[in-house]
Image (cartoon, rainbow, N blue to C red; front, side, top):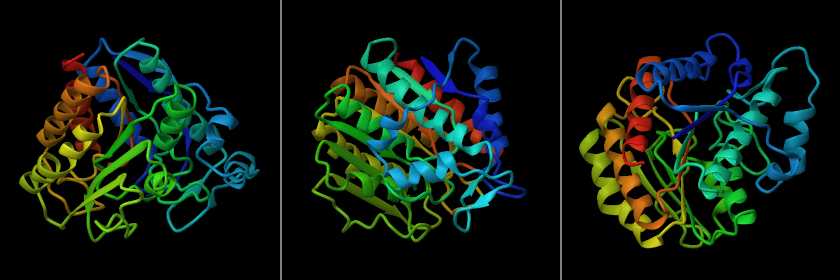
Amino acid sequence: MRIYSHPACLAHDTGPGHPERPERLSAIISALHEAMPALDWHEAPRATRGQLLRAHAEPLLTMVLETQSVQRVQLDADTMLSPASAEAALRAAGAAVAAVDDVMNDKTKRVFCAVRPPGHHATSATAMGFCLFNNVAVAAMHALEKHGLARVAIVDFDVHHGNGTQAIFEHEPRVLYLSSHQMPLYPDTGYPSERGVGNIVNAGLPPGAGSAIFRTAWSERLLPILDDFRPQLLLVSAGFDAHWRDPLAQLQLETDDYTWLTQELTALADRHAQGRIVSLLEGGYDLQALRECSVAHVGALRVHE
């Protein structure tokens, strides 16, 4: 199993006290090295402009990649652009593209991208919610356009709804987007009525919901729809902020819940997608929870490989 990361992702500077901080990634990298020393680590390449343009509008690329500033620029209430952010964003999206190539070219079945900034809130034209480029959307478009896939599924278990991912693909029937997330919560999207062209399925979870409600949502609603879709590639927006330790939300998941869902996803990928899964880090803001959950998630991805 491969892991993609890059030192540039640590240099993205969000400022003092910001929850999406470099220590998040450092915690995950150190935990994975310690728990699974045999993992196959690779440095993420840069995404090309053409790869980014499949999911994003030119003005967003210009803003992220060509803003010349020696200080941090605040794009919205919580999204920052620092002098090192363009390189980090290119490497994060590039990891997603390289991971898709790896699994489609049979170099490995599973890849985890330990990268930041996260991506699932970024729309085609707008950076928001800590996100600059939508890494999983770039990955999905690459799978469709370069590898010619007809069915790509994106599974998002971040505590926040991936509004950007949904918006990019809501009219694209080749992509199925499935999300469990706390409601109400930022960004106030992800209602059951949001169906796209029948390819969007949202399961909102009430504040305080724990393992039983989370597992029921997946086992009774989301996973059967995913199974029926028969994806040729499974992409995962892996946010670990539904864990009970996380400071930004109120769900009460345990580390074992991430193991359980990842095992369910690997079994499904084995049935339909020749085992191919690309997982990308999204949220998660408690360092201890990030260590535990990333090890649980990657460990479950490995065990069936």
